[in-house]
Length: 146
Image (cartoon, rainbow, N blue to C red; front, side, top):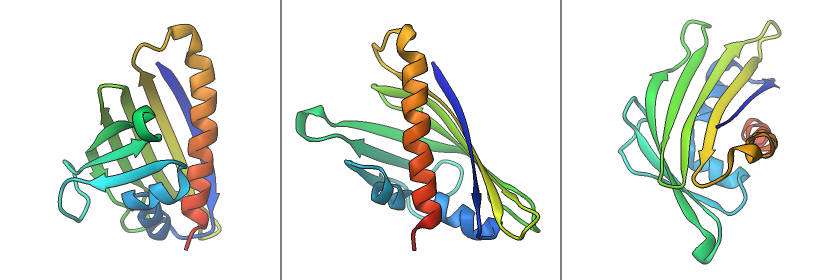
């Protein structure tokens, strides 16, 4: 199990940062070699399922995820979403929180525990470092994008 935590600041208010981070198809715009297919009808809610397909050709794999907690922000309060990774290759969970910041913007907290099938435990530290770097860039791209 490779756990990581990252935090980012956003100039956007909580509701706008929340929408940017939970527009699942937009993740494909900021994560290289990835496509996203939302399986359940919109809007996102507890029980929403989407699949990230990452890689190229025979080296690609599906990463199905289910929204198991869906608490959008409200009345200047934080939002929280928890995803369970349900794949045969990648498992674990991710939590996305968006909190109001004093300057009118918001603060994003992303926690993830990722497991890759057949990856020896001694590589967890490297996996956590690589995942934190990749998801940090993805969050920055989602918060920066139009």
